[in-house]
Length: 76
Picture 1 (tube, one colour):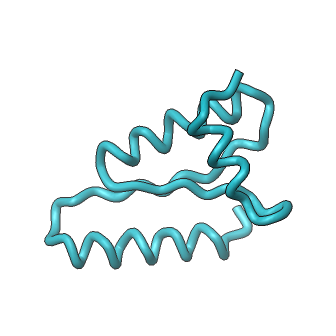
Picture 2 (cartoon, rainbow, N blue to C red; picture 1 turned 30 degrees about the horizontal axis):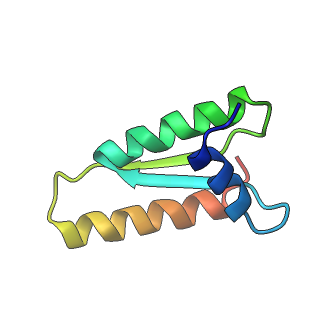
């Protein structure tokens, strides 16, 4: 059974579009756990984009934004 976070993530999808989760560091680990929970419940597994924070905050934000954009335009 899905927890409230997984139900909210699935409900936030726009129409039939695939779900994309992302986060920095620890939030990325939570995104992975959420994706596993959704897949284990029989839903299509979401894509997950992880970003580290080894650079300054502005660079990290831009890197995550690029990764999210790449993940939404990729066919894989």
